[in-house]
Length: 88
Image (cartoon, rainbow, N blue to C red; front, side):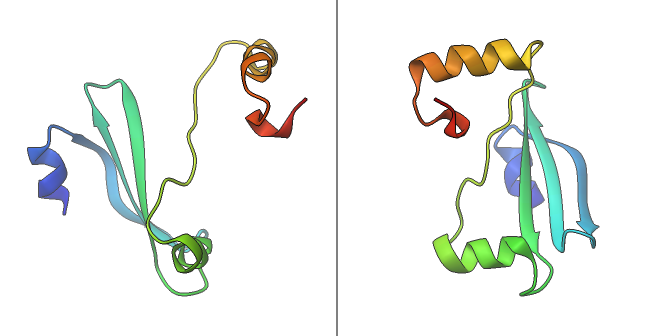
């Protein structure tokens, strides 16, 4: 699987590894050092990821942005999108 990412132009920045506390196997990849993508797989059926896979299948779980001013960023986003973080 890792070779598929490398061929596609991604670079592995961490992993593959195991986080027993979260019950997941992980791999962090990047493309052009711009963004990081975390790929997760459950260790067993007790993992939160396992439950999500059973409910919705393989899917995007969350998106994270690094910002300088959290309050201002939330303010700007909630002006444009009612659904952002349940604010408004």
